[in-house]
Length: 121
Image 1 (spheres, rainbow, N blue to C red):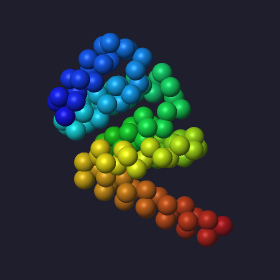
Image 2 (cartoon, rainbow, N blue to C red):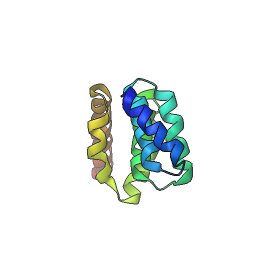
Image 3 (cartoon, one colour):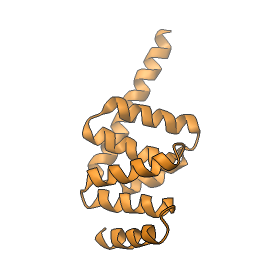
């Protein structure tokens, strides 16, 4: 992860508009345990393109990791509304096991709640 971070940082320096390098930096920071720095980079990427599903999904995991369930839900809803959920599966490979389990459990319980609410209606 440190080597990936250094390489991605150099790529960002060469082209500040390169979103893929910014996301790669954030992923490397996440892997190194620098969650706050990763969060800041993702927010910057999101400010440039607020409809970017890979960025929103990563931010959702960071919010869930911090215990901000409402914020995580809102970000996941936005990913679903955009319709580009294909980013979720590759992102799951980046997450640490505990965060992958957190995301899966959260989504599972949220889906059950939605189904129960629809049955009651």
